[in-house]
Length: 144
Image (cartoon, rainbow, N blue to C red; front, top):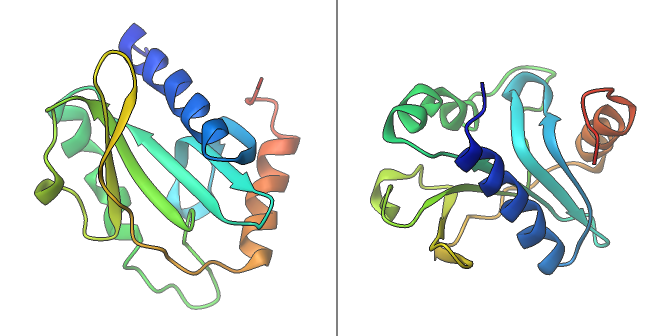
């Protein structure tokens, strides 16, 4: 069951994406082989951002396998979930050096989100982006 804090941070992540000019955003977006992202958004220039919310160190360790999927090269399957990939956590829970080199780190300080580490841009095909968009537009799971 999702904690109140996890749900609150997902809502903050959606607002963060809107504030960063993402014109379409959703929670719980299925990114295929990569898995489900807590929040995902796309800008009008087709740049995408995914945010994984972590509210405990155990949660971070349990989902560390997702970060390694960025490195997997599966023949015929593009696995990149977003152009920019972030972890959002309560302030101080995780440190920049603990995060995958391609991921960024966002902290929520109780009032706003602070970017502690910028994510590396990862090229992603328009075809892959379209698949993800179609997935969340057709999904019964998404209510936003």
